[in-house]
Amino acid sequence: MTTSIVAELHDGPAHRHRQDGSMWYIPPRTGQRLISVTSVFDFIAKEQLDKRWRPGLSAQAAFDELPRVVAASRVKPCGRTNNECDHDFQDRCAACPCGDCKACMIRWLTYRHYAETKKARDRGSAMHHWIENWVKFDGKVSRPDPGEECAPYVASFLRFVEDMGLTPDSWELLETTVLNYTDGWGGTLDGHIRFDATATPKARKVCAKFGLVAPLLTFDSKSREKTDASFWPDNAKQLAAYCRGEVVLLDDGSEEPLPPTDGGLVVQFRPDGYGWRRVDTSEHTYRAFLANRESALWEIEYGAASTQVKSFPDLEIPGLAAQPAKATRRSTPRKAAPLALGATADHPPSEGARLTDEMIPF
Image 1 (cartoon, helix red, strand yellow):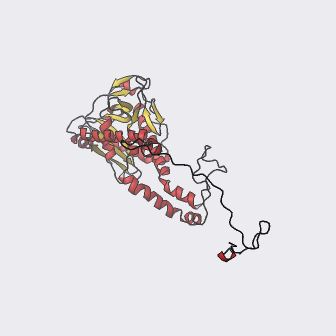
Image 2 (cartoon, rainbow, N blue to C red):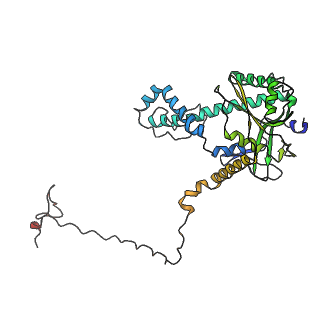
Image 3 (cartoon, rainbow, N blue to C red):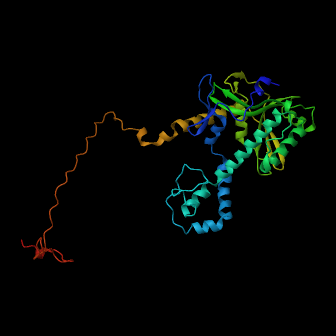
């Protein structure tokens, strides 16, 4: 076990910071800003999320809250729908969106997925924290209590380690910050796990996917609320990157070389059990990740300016004289309309009176 690295376990990356709306790793040794691997994927349109899951949540919420939706359709917009107040979300003020008008209801349905995404993220964080403590304290975890929400996922994890014959000593790295200075990224991998084909029949199946008796695998855990297994291409690109980390960044700012592994394994924990997949961590997959990284950096640094008027000032066209400035039109006093016969300035014509050619005395 790589004791010097595992001893540096912590609740979160010590040198990760949020800037420009994304996460970055800034190692003290160089001060270089390295984009987070997970932030790279924030800029990628995902088939399952964008075309199915998010619209499906909005549609389901509309039916679940049908009486509210119908009532809101009869309420005029409050004019405060897009206000973002600084106070605690549980407080209310006069500038807060009403939440009851048509515009507020549309916004609530549109962004329904944010609440579910946060719920899944919190659950995943709680699971990672529990697994970390399980490894740190030699499988004896009395606290923190995983809570009712995470209890089924913890049970699935314990079933996984039993089926695979794993112990806390099987983890050679855990919740470790890895950096790649050459390609400009950083990330926090879930761990390196040593499997043993002789431990259990299920462990042998995992090892058979790699053709090794005792492969050391870059491990990533996911939690999924639904009971069917579901794995995505981003899982492969993420682990392809983690397999190519150059150094491990410790909490005190020091660095150590990242040990190589034999491949990547994603394990998905669900309320009804777990599933695992070997993922493609080839050079081809890593190049796909680097292409996503370049696209993400472009979005962050240049995306907003790429269509702004001020980004493209007027330039002189070769061979054409400069366009003369437009002459300013002088405003001239408007001639007063002739008065109708019998009318004077002091006595204007009555309403509806019209001036005709026969009425003009010349």
